[in-house]
Image (cartoon, rainbow, N blue to C red; front, side, top):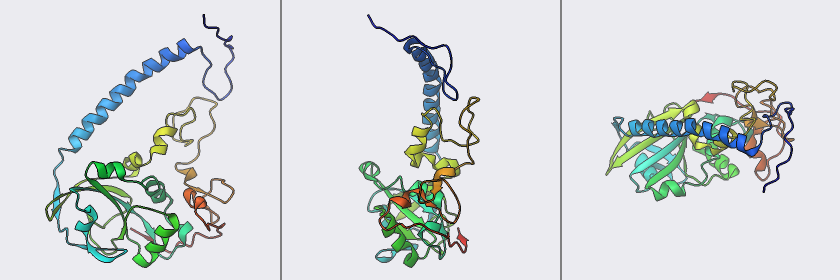
Length: 260
């Protein structure tokens, strides 16, 4: 027989109620019904997404990468499909002044091997000048290809902060899908895992039980100082930058303009 410890009647402050395993399993199973419905609705939305119309544009438009100007077609690397993340850029800013939200997205896509296995290429484009972008990419240790789309019209250039999907038919290129803001969340598996934890993302907008740790403004952990304290001030860097060799404490973000 299984011996279970006495379950205290008193709840721990700021924590979920304590229950035995059978009670927990019943509550877990009840939630699973909603989770499965959520998954099925997501599948249905994805099916509708695959049925969207597409827009043709000139795939010979030039973008600038490590080998100089190349046609946008090169980003497909010979594959039929392409996913692009469009990274904002602050002209003239030092590394620590670059966009924390775009860092959050780009950092999670260092490896596109599973996209490639499905015949999909991945690239990052930004409106920064290539002579500024190249040293930043090297500093961050990014392994996926980056290109400057400065002065290039949408859908290759245009507004940044988007995940954008493209399809190629020979030399013809089509825009099929784009999303931004919370639509970008699938690129970052950390959020999905945080949503599974008792305290979630730690953001003020979340619906939490009374007594939970107080949430902060959205995205508060995107930047921190050298000691790991969340801050958006002049001593901050996007969080992953503190892992980079030679990343020293900063005293200015050095932003002079936000170039979309």
